[in-house]
Amino acid sequence: MAKNLHQIVRMCISCRGRNIQSDMQRFQCVDGILKPFDGNGRTFYLCDNCLSDEKKLLKALMRQCKSGDKEKLMNKLKEIITDDR
Image (cartoon, rainbow, N blue to C red; front, side, top):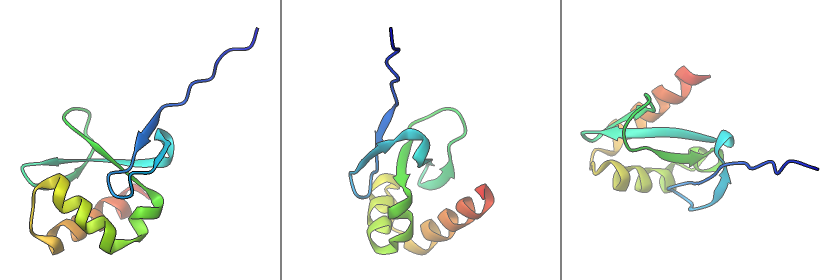
């Protein structure tokens, strides 16, 4: 009998596309500051396609983090992404 291989699917906050969790980046906002996921708290996912589309991504990040500082959000995101790779 074959086992049912279940893969967890999550939604990107920018494009609302659904993808396998392992193919997406996980972040969180604490007090309006963007951070990589640290193990607890409310989180959100971004797909790799949206990470390359800055205009669409910025709108979603501002909505999720409830922050109006566009430059600060984008700088922090770029810092997080370069640290992960």
